Length: 262
Image (cartoon, rainbow, N blue to C red; front, side, top):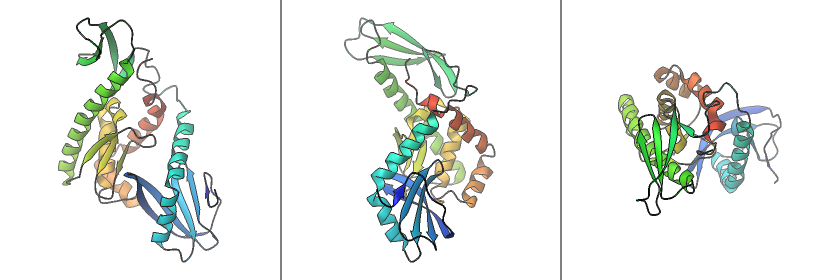
């Protein structure tokens, strides 16, 4: 496709802005660079995110319209980058040694206990008991257990994350909009221009301090829709160990996307 590429060329940049646009309710941050050497629009997607280069004289509205016209391609490329990065599975990551029949819950390994319950007709039941998640099935076997466990974790994530947002927003003096739980393939959280916060349900598996970092990150986006130096200064002021939490997420990313039942 002319004008867009997963890997970009080098340009002499005269101006850069950190912006974002929305596509189907999904906020997509991007860097807009104006180049004195550029002769056409160019969009590049890589590990550093989305970058758009335009010639001088192009307005922000024109640049954003071009991005919106190619939003599906951008999302596809972001997913591709995510999959490439997820192939790197550090053997020393916190979740690297998790055994079959176990999952992580709030940063701690939890055993999965499968039991047949003749009283059940068709639906499976998932219950949280100390040190274990009990999955009761109507018959011998694990058919439907993955879906039932994911449904349970999504509901638990909604309760946990909404609670952490309420606490952190109160501490920060903010009043965020709606909080939604999604299954993003390329990010842990996002903040729309209207202040709607979205979080990946898999965050229910990470340590609480890591979750709090993601919550703080997105809450700051309510007033700072960019990843500027000032944005990271605000993150650091509220969470001095944010780099450690980012590292934890990066190292355990691929493990968090593994099948729940193995």
